[in-house]
Image 1: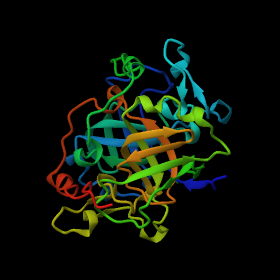
Image 2: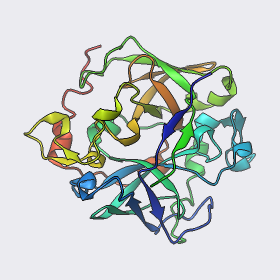
Image 3: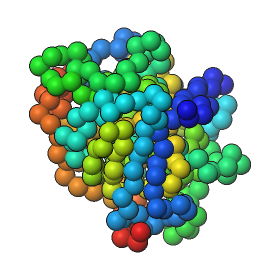
Length: 159
Length: 159
């Protein structure tokens, strides 16, 4: 059995979106506010030279008893195959980590405004990493059909 | 001040690469072995339908006193601008999280073989997520020149 690790959020999401939903995340601009007890504006210096940032965050509202460790239909939809929790992006996952690549709108001191962050108000943020073509996009992607279908309405503008 | 969180590794990296270095990560095939006390083969079911997986791991050898919370030159190279720790991918970062998108070579029970994982033998793994075009690649990327230069030898075959 692996030993638990302790991580401390670097900041928090401030967003008009306060309820977790499955779709319609397009058009949302959220702010990531760093913990000003630990970080100054230097921590984000130069991030405005990038178009996109990877945000690693915690799905903090997922309760322990909801976490899936085996397989399930994505979103419970039986039209899609039953696949392992590590073969899907659902939030009821071990360690409850979310990962989204967002467009950088503005960097203002210890705050970062981003578009396309599918995390609700109050979400703890664990790391920010600039998206780098040489690091993140080595090859074309291949994926099963369900993985394209499930994203059909995800970024629809509903916010 | 944010409250610490407890996460438990889902498994570990098994790799011929045992020392952390900055370049030459091409050609490395590593195995990610899930904690078999908690996970069965179902957890990875269907992952072989994807070409790539995002691996979130811990840079476990970074000591607390080495962690940067402000700005520094990437890799200490003064030819590149001094940028914030959240505007670079260096491992001496708050929470010590690594994120790499790897090519899936094979799924075998509770083991996953991947190419292009820049994590050494014994690295704790915190999450695996399939790379999905609709989720991960909404836009073309833009980045500063240093971010392209720093990757020049990173995936060179040296292993």
